[in-house]
Image 1 (cartoon, rainbow, N blue to C red):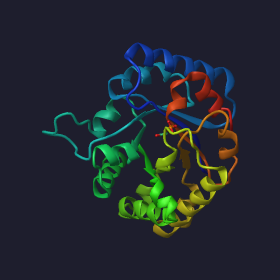
Image 2 (image 1 turned 90 degrees about the vertical axis):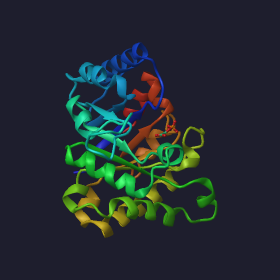
Image 3 (image 1 turned 60 degrees about the horizontal axis):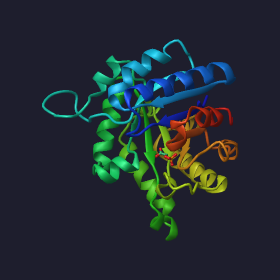
Image 4 (image 1 turned 135 degrees about the vertical axis):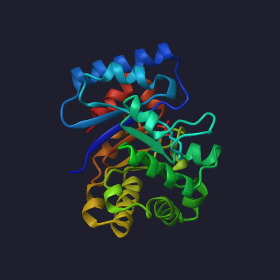
Length: 253
Ligand code: PGA
C-alpha cells in the first residue's frame, strides 16, 4: 500500500547545535502527538546526518534523508558524497532532482537518472522531484513539462527499481514564495503524474507510488492538500525548520 509521508527539507539552514535541538523537538512531538502510520523524514545538511540519525534511532516513525547524492560510486570527485557513504551513516532516503539543484547546479535529466540508480543500488529510497516554472503554467504547458521530466529521468528504471521511488511534485512558483498550489491544482497534477507513471511502469507500481506535494505547504493548508486522493503527503521546506509547524503538518493527515 501507498505510504503516507511528510518529509522536511532543511536545505542550507541551521548550525550543528540548532539542528540537534530542532530534531530533538520534532522527535519528542512526534512521539507524544502523532498517531497513525505516517512516515516522518528529516533531511538535514550532510555534516549533521549521522548525529541526527542517532537522535531519532529509537523512534520507528522517524527516518533520515540526504539532500543530494553523487551519481558516481567512488573516486576523485572532490566535494561529492556517494550513496554507499550515505548508507554507511544510516541514510534511508535521498532527495533527487530538487529544482534548486536543477537550476543552480545544472543537474540534467541524465545526471538525475544516474543518481536514482546509485541510490537504489544501495537500497536508499529516492524522493524524485519534478515541477514546472511559472511561465510553463501560464502558457498551459505544465502537464507536458512535468511529463517530460518524469519520462527523461525515470523511464530507464526497471519496474523493480521504480518500486523504491517516491515522487514529489513541487511547482517552482510555489517554492518558498508563500503561494501554494490550490488543492485542486495539486490533485489534478498528482493524478496526471500517476497516470504517466502507469504508462512507464506497471499500473500496480504506479498506484502504490507515494506522490508528495511541495511548495509553501504549512499547517494552514496541509489538511486540504493531504485530503486529495492522489496527494500522499508533503515535502516541506520553510515550515520544516519550526518543530511546532512541522509537527502540525504531520498531524494534518
Ligand atoms: P517550501 O519549500 O516549503 O519552503 O516552499 C519546499 C521545497 O523546496 O521542498
